[in-house]
Length: 401
View 1: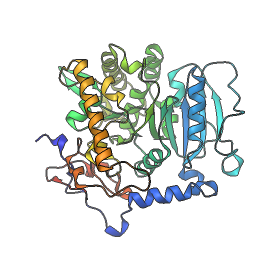
View 2 (view 1 turned 90 degrees about the vertical axis):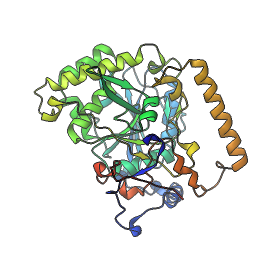
View 3 (view 1 turned 30 degrees about the vertical axis):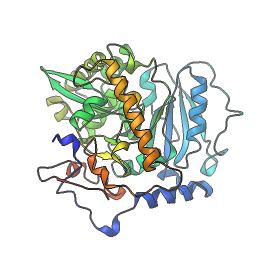
View 4 (view 1 turned 45 degrees about the vertical axis):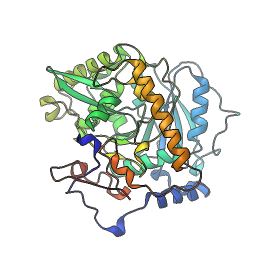
């Protein structure tokens, strides 16, 4: 049986004590209770700043601002405004709360140059260490964002995101692959910054310490700023990213960059070119390891709530269409399989009641048939030592009950 069809538990990764374990169900209940308390129950530095990337999509921008200001873990929303002119007034927008703690504005526009690099510009007066870099067409639920933030607190020096990708060596070149390869191989080495958490220090490092030729490359190609950030973070931390399993709303898939022809070739070129720029740089932020080899680190770890095997799916179903397949399958067959899977899920939900309103039910043992090597663990274990959490030779199956 392929490793990607097993739930693996590294023998070295043992919970410190049962008393320290935190139930995800209890945590979710506490978050729901805190949402109704003044200030959301979170001090400012335990929250996250949502940094919205937008460009000439006013309706999506308004929807995103209104959504993220409703999340109790969001301290403020900063909009990266690169369109020129005056940013729109937010009068009439349904913003959650007139101001944050200490009277800080919940929504601010940062007027910056028209460049993809601007999304990683250090912003003044940030009150949180955590930054949620997100496109205006991506909607992560408040609960999913809270889960990702909890994971990030235990791995502050890496990227934590919702869209996993994988790099592989083939014929002496780096190749970029999307969801199908992540699923097939059961590992990933990149998370896209269209929806990812990172430490605010990486904004400074990207803008002022990363090799200038890398930023110039991003400007010339109008692409690959997310690959550059992943290279930077992996180079500095030596750690893999963290993939958070979720269900996102992605309103910009149709006609987006990732669905057009030649996208995988362009992204593979990004990997090879940025690797060469890092390897040939004398910048202080570039480690000796990055000069010898690709700094990207692969991981098998998936952060997510316990659930049935039907819940083990990408962040959006569009990932299936936007991804490259490890084997050639006609698009008609892919669509037929997706429709069959959707029908199966609907029948399962109607007959078994796996999804219903109210508190989550206890996960069934069918979670052991996971599509990916998911290790279910308590939040306090997440990435305390990422290397120790990877499947080892002594790995065993873990049945979730």
